[in-house]
Length: 157
Image 1 (cartoon, rainbow, N blue to C red):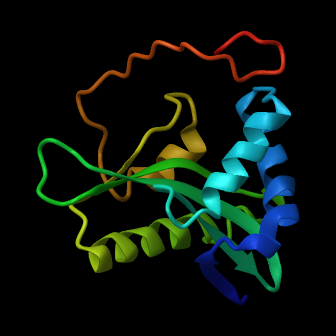
Image 2 (cartoon, rainbow, N blue to C red; image 1 turned 45 degrees about the vertical axis):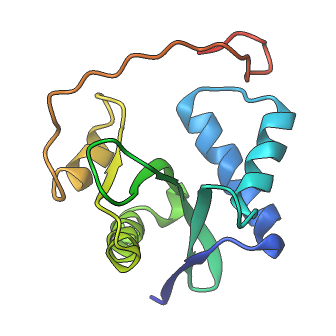
């Protein structure tokens, strides 16, 4: 098994869109096409705080981690938020997600950032088995107020 983790680039759009469609379906949402276009444009814009790493397994793009560099009030250095992490179902169970998280940890350390964090759904038992190897959950509860619409239906989740 040859696994490589690398930054997304212009030529990766088709592979990313294929995986993104799987991720969006898995999450039960139906995003508007202009949001998908905008997300891709942010991922390849070097001035944007959003970036993506791709997992390439035996020459095929099988996963992504979309992250955000953020400034934070309790830290001297930026922190990194994993916004989306996805592995194609055909590649699951082969260490791809673990390799992406390990890569992100090393990247954050290389950048001198102070924290890597992410969220997952409480009922995502498969992902939580992996995530619990890195850290336990904390006492925070997330709240959200949506102002824009991003779904095809026009109703924010």
